[in-house]
Image 1 (cartoon, rainbow, N blue to C red):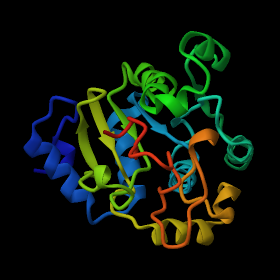
Image 2 (image 1 turned 60 degrees about the horizontal axis):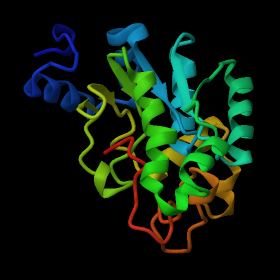
Image 3 (image 1 turned 180 degrees about the horizontal axis):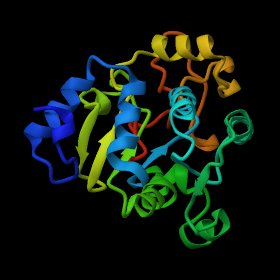
Image 4 (image 1 turned 120 degrees about the vertical axis):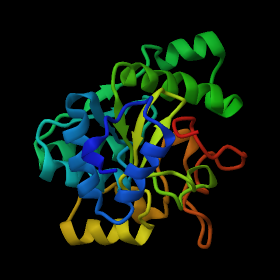
Length: 238
């Protein structure tokens, strides 16, 4: 069955969805993005956390569509370097990112739930400052595009290029699912893509300031996320 013959939405059958994803296993991420924008039009959005993978997708999207909806989750705890990169990317690609955030300020959160919630209840902090705002922005969309790769974490190991997202009840598109870290950095070098300078200082994965540390030689790239705990995901990709 050809992709063009399918009407892709959350209720598409598992078999039909598998056909779509399998076909994209041998195509480029750019081909996946072009299909996504043609298939879902204004009902799809790209989510970025301004990681290396996200910067690669931004470069690709800028070459494909000037009308793409692109948003980021602002926890009010991002690194200064991340905000600087955001501004650099906006200037480079002549785009404007949609800021998505909880209305709960850090002061209000501390007053209601205690200081430094991220240390005591990191899952709750992520839910308040990431998951719930994401759920709100995805409401009404048919699909969203992420920058996850299969080799990043065990949770992501089985990610399909196109899959059903039961957590948020829409289609999830992962154009870089099959890429390696080497693929990502080769693209960045080849296309001179801006990236977070914290990568040059031993950071392997960059999130919020209190929950992100540099990694040691030989450690997994995400070892610096929630160091000292068993937590490996913020809840967006469970």
